[in-house]
Length: 304
Image (cartoon, rainbow, N blue to C red):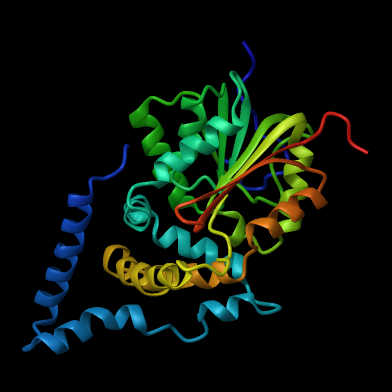
């Protein structure tokens, strides 16, 4: 039996199923009811304004588009944001994707994992992709995230599931706490567009993967022109921030999402970025009418 995947010295701080749609929308209704009772507004229009105001008023200096300017502390903003929304993160994923995100993670895990593989899940959040990799046959999986509240949720879920093959640690995608050529798989779900230095993260993925190891990335790509693009933009720019404000209480986090998508790469561009780091791209799947992409690649056994 192989030893569990261990942390190296490079990490300075290393330490259920889908929610039913009915329950999700009940939570939204309850949130609206609580807000309207608390404010006691005398008419429908002021009540609606009172509810929506926290989602439309952007705190000074925190406009999402400014985070992509030179010198902006995007990493710090993202770290704080994911910590703030951790309690309702799973619920929002279910609402935004109509429950499909679990199936996408299972798809990514099946494309990545071979029996007994050692895998690192970068930006693991509450652990859903970590658990999908274990279910697909991984021997052990290290879930890495830089938001402590997300890791706390992941550990709670691992205990509930009895997922003994999962370990979770605080860490940075650009400074992985692993030795060179120490894992068989590197994966992430809806994370890489949030990494300010994408090239550094991909270089680290290459470093820790063994020759023949695989990489799987689920992400929301920049939308290409299509008949469905206007509908997708309404969903990301209007519906998601509205739901995010009501459900999580942090509308700004979900206003950041469409901005981050606009600043990310289209699938062909991300394919080229992977190739520029030496990866051999094996498969690109576009899901949910092109609003989600799965890239699967490997590190060739012989390189250079």
